[in-house]
Image (cartoon, rainbow, N blue to C red; front, side, top):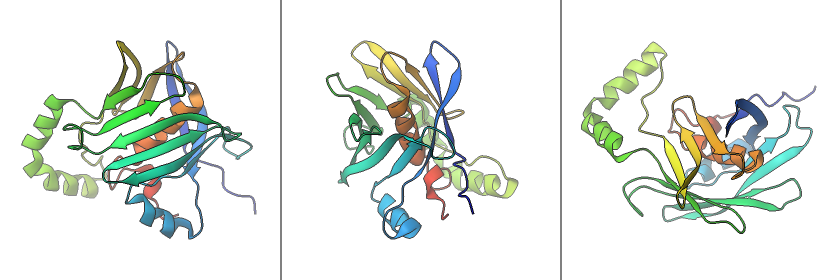
Length: 206
């Protein structure tokens, strides 16, 4: 029996220009399969493959975990030949500020640093946090979207904004000159994998 095609496609918005599909992403399972992956991801570990097409004809990029612990996770995005495309660092909130910090490092280029959400909207979120359990229950029973904290991320590199994740719709916008689609797809998959217990795409048991 032929394997199922990869259903999860990655769409990026190059500025300027329309959205386009740049790959298909799925977990890369090691020894122990799904249970081992789910056990490891709790500490921040991730392992993905971005395929050029849904039938796994060729790899566009691979995401591997370089290290994770003490609130910091470091991921390497590798090309089809194993070359380093970029390094992505995620630091938990309250480690170096109030918000989760995402850093994209490219060989020979300055770091691009982004923070999850805006301070104002996090204040609003915390203000209404006593109501969240009721909203979660209503969402689950009603089949609607589960409430999520502010998720917009704007990466800054000096005076530029080369990369932006818009949580509404899960869109990643990027400047063509800054990042090619392969690491762009990997960054988007990583960000979405930290979308919460009920929303993260890689938490499934199959």
